[in-house]
Length: 211
Image (cartoon, rainbow, N blue to C red; front, side, top):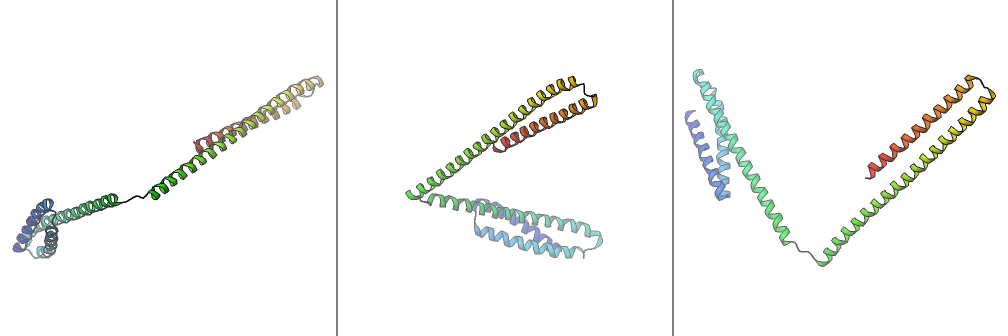
């Protein structure tokens, strides 16, 4: 076990040194060598896990700690390799996109078509806004008409109540009849105010939706 442990530990150190060289050279050969060493380290760690259980009990804990350290180093190297490969892919993709952008050629017709599309889109957006404004204006006009109608009804009810009060006073109607009339007028007033509140709420919601 000792020979395999020291061999694996030496591979870890060599791989770390290769990473330092890889950062400066960006060589594919060095990357391939790193991959090969990491694979060997992985296989050695698997063998060492098996050998740990064959160690004497007095040395087993210490052997397990050293193997766990090698496994940790292996995982660290593997993550470092994946990070390097991802960085390479991102760099290549960025270079490719830059080359495509630099090599792209625009013709006069394509410019005109692009401009036409933008203008059409702007016109459609403007028409939609104008339609929305007209809808809000119509709705506000309807709301004003409804409120005016409710106010007129309130005025007529008030006038009717005053006339009835005078008539019923002259006729000396019973208090029960008068209370019934007043109750009905009060209910009509609640209906009027509720209708006004609902109408105003609908107008506010519509204005918030189209704004």
